[in-house]
Image (cartoon, rainbow, N blue to C red; front, side, top):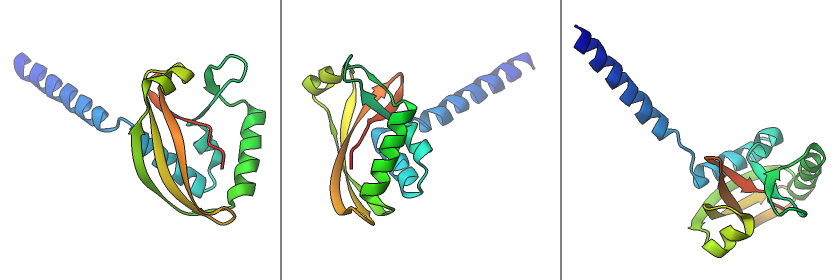
Length: 141
């Protein structure tokens, strides 16, 4: 009886690990979530994934409130609403690029974007693994 309970607990533990592993974000998935948030004008959600390189320290950090508002205003004026987007390609960043940002893992993601004011354009963004999460280097549209 006790052995059966231990086996059930162990199987439950393995299932939790498996389900958790399936939820791991990727650079592609993070980009999709970011672009979907933008297309729905959910800028706060999009900005949760965005980092910037500090000009004084060269360290990557989250945006402060003023920077967030400036980015939102700029994005709205440059793009208007996003009609559609699609991911094109994901490339692993080379070590010399990663060194510039002080990170060990990163990708360059290419995508196309069709927006009200910006029209159709091809874009790219950098994503870096920061404390286990994928973060997007602040894109300028």
